[in-house]
Length: 218
Ligand code: ZN
Image 1 (cartoon, helix red, strand yellow):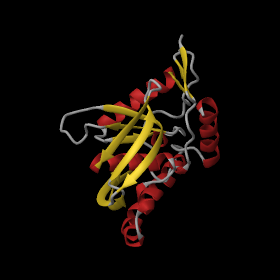
Image 2 (cartoon, protein in one colour):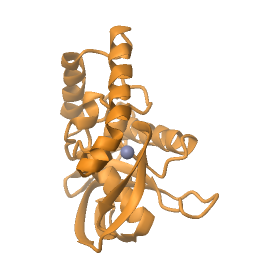
Image 3 (cartoon, helix red, strand yellow):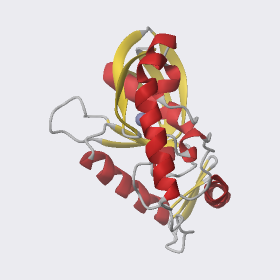
């Protein structure tokens, strides 16, 4: 067992790390699941269990052909997201974890169509800065800084929003919101049906599970 301190982020390679909740299998949560609107907290520890879950998140992201996936999308109330930085190059995978990220600089503006694994079949144009400088910790607790532009800057901001409890449809203007209203209502109906069938716990149970996860690593 080794343990190191990198600023606030503690690396714990002890195998007896606290479990990720049994109810939280790695799958992408769909809007309007309450875990998607909860602002995530910074991680203070990275342990074997979390690393295993991050591996599963990468597998899920590749399978779904996503270029980014945030912890909140799989029910983890932690400030981290994963990205495939080679997503714009066909057939290339370059896996990056952004832990406790901070966007240091934003410049330019661009409008591009976005979609989200948590909002299936909804696409809309979103206006965002075109370039960002972002710092974060990697899985080994090393701090890094990237300058991202175009699609990757877009994806990183989309994922960063997720850990703040924001989904891309929140960023649409009045006309854009009106255009997706029907599709969102359909997802809300599906969610209510799943809940009636007992596939999704009630709000109180979800809140308790998220608080337990927070108490273990934040
Ligand atoms: Zn998303």
